[in-house]
Amino acid sequence: MVRVVFASVSNLPTKIFSKKWKEATYRVVVAVSLLTLPATAIVSLIIGPKVPRSGRTFVKPATIFIQVPMIVDLPAISDPTFLTAAAAELNNDDLVIGVVAFGEAKAYLKSAFGKGLTSHVVLDRFGATPVTITHCDLTSCTRVFSSTKENSLSDIHCGGWMAEQELALLVGNKRFAQSSNEIPFDDVPFVITTWDKWRVEHPHSPVYLGTHNAIHGKGQSE
Image (tube, rainbow, N blue to C red):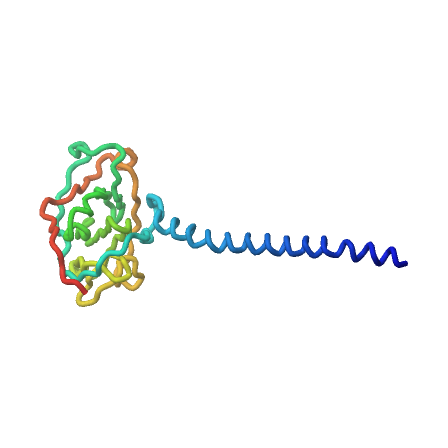
């Protein structure tokens, strides 16, 4: 009887050491996880989303480096100039914003919307229907709008840069983040695709390549 009790006591330090070792290991694993999780999240935010897929109504803004908020009031580019698909000297892999609406198909060179403060908003017409194309090169956010109210789309101006780190669209006297669901116009479906794919599907589509009158000046800081 005494021998049995003695044997159990002799094994006690080993069991205590084993338990402490397991607890220490668990604490190390938890600590490493807590340290690496923020770093993984930060890397994910910096990388941001990939090239937007086609068929979305609008592209959710990517995370970017912080820009200083700015207030401007710049009208949209109206009466944009188009070239025929045959005359446009574009590379096959150039990205275009393609819009098929109201019986017409048109393409807009994506990079043309990153040429200055006045390049982000283009007011166009598909037949008798006004259509406005908006794109921000910093966030890769694209929105296309239409309205049944005559001339109401001409109220959409570039409003500068929001504190929420998005392009601001000025509608009348109210500024909206570009991705806002409160913008009082109808969304028009579009695709972002390469020029060669768009040209195969729409060989007679005119293409907008931008304007040389873009403004690169600064607006009023908030």
